[in-house]
Image (cartoon, rainbow, N blue to C red; front, side, top):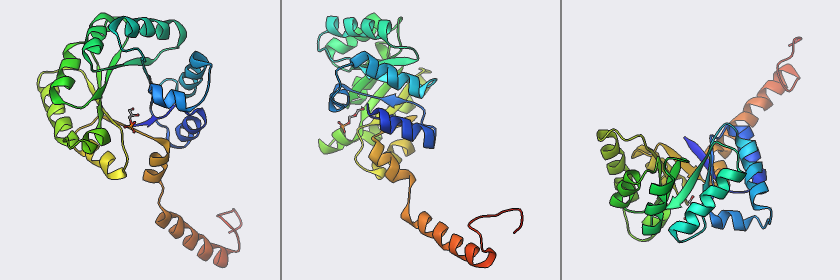
Length: 223
Ligand code: G3P
């Protein structure tokens, strides 16, 4: 259900250990933000950390040839399971068709219903919908997720709808409510979603009462 949208090894480790997160999505921007030069080593560190869950790794090239070449590099240098994220562009659709029998494909940057369906037709087994980017452009991501889910299920297509590009917890909730199978969320927002000061406050309040009555921080055999 929850994936981490990040290439930061420390955050991925911490969030996976705490919440049992089931996968990671990266993109060229997130990789570059980490300021590392050991590209494949960096990716392998992530696959090792999240095994047996999937790393979604994106091609950087803009032509079909460059995308295929990069996907082949991933096949040679990264341990499965991973899925190659290919942008839903004309070059990307062609690359999906060429690669679909060799590696699982996630069509990314999807902002239109037909673009999503074409990605599925081209061989993608996951479709990554950019929620906040769509909202910022006046588009309707939630209706689109709903339609994509409806039509892909009716046509009996095995496809995961992954919603990504989030800026608020409510966007994440709506993506799930309207039918996304998975949501990929940046680390800071994930923490914000799972922790609440009110819970901490209640715990402190209970602990205080317990300590006062039993003279111990938690239950022990002599309580
Ligand atoms: O995984 C896609 C996502 O990283 C895009 O997010 O915040 O750049 O719109 P953003």
